Length: 115
Image (cartoon, rainbow, N blue to C red; front, side, top):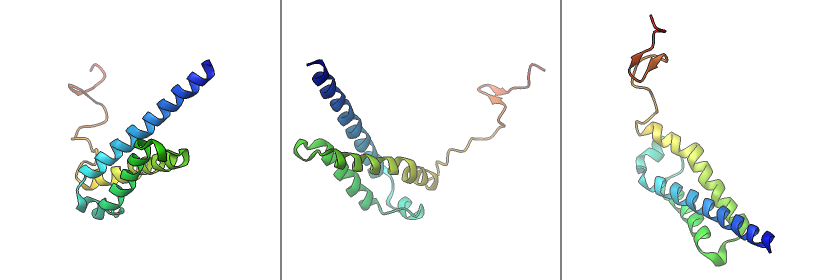
């Protein structure tokens, strides 16, 4: 009985992680500009919205939630996070560059070792 509850709880946690990952990826894909996808030389915005929307639907609708479909949706979300989103971010002007200074700068200015 305890093992059944553990399996059920673990399954619910895994499903929740899959759902949250796909929803966040879908929202981020929807918020990006269409021209950024072309500039980053990635697939089009509608392509990613369809793929990630299907991933959300697979995780939301209980009678089609088969594990291999959920894993495919998770893989699509991970590809979006790891490959597409950084490219879109870099093309859109948020390349993650520092605003100047050197690597020895602290939060209040340069660190000179107490000199």
